[in-house]
Image 1 (cartoon, rainbow, N blue to C red):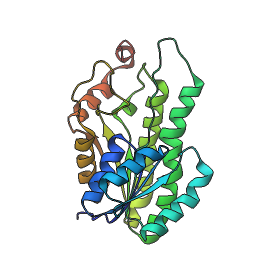
Image 2: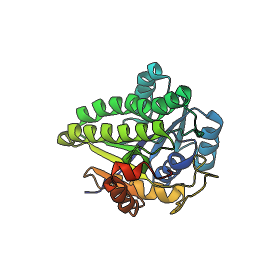
Image 3: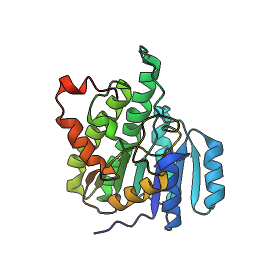
Length: 247
């Protein structure tokens, strides 16, 4: 059965996959609440798509105490909620020999704890109404602990596990939980980084994400699908080989 999303909430909608998801949902007729720290980018998004389709809510995902009140306000403004997407994420550059707790903490807080703050609220609401979809943007980086950015890999591995737990908790109540694990997407986070391949646009990633979310069967999928082959190989590599790889 295919899901129809009429009332959507996208957290991390000021750029990248989140922005593309908001645009696509609005183009398909949904009323979309967009949340992000950068108000100007959200306002530009609303102006370009249409104020009758996009509602702007500036918010820093680290303001955990303010999240419950904002979530309730958004649900009231939209007249309910069918789907929530968490696409907020940070990946600061980590130099060789650098061990920065400040950077590591920011990745754990934004990529993982921010998602949990929003998704726990949505999970309780969707369980009560016996419907709804939760969509989390994780990453192939969560498949193994890569040497280049330990905290980023950790945050995405933890997010993937958290979403699997939510799926196992909520499926019996008719709630659809989807984990999206992109490879390289052409966003500000990846721009200028060496060694990228199979690069897809945020629009392509958004289209695949929504197609998977609408299946209403729970999913954990790589975007595009061919990254599943890479993930399988990476997971099978013995640790003594993997640790010698320069990524």
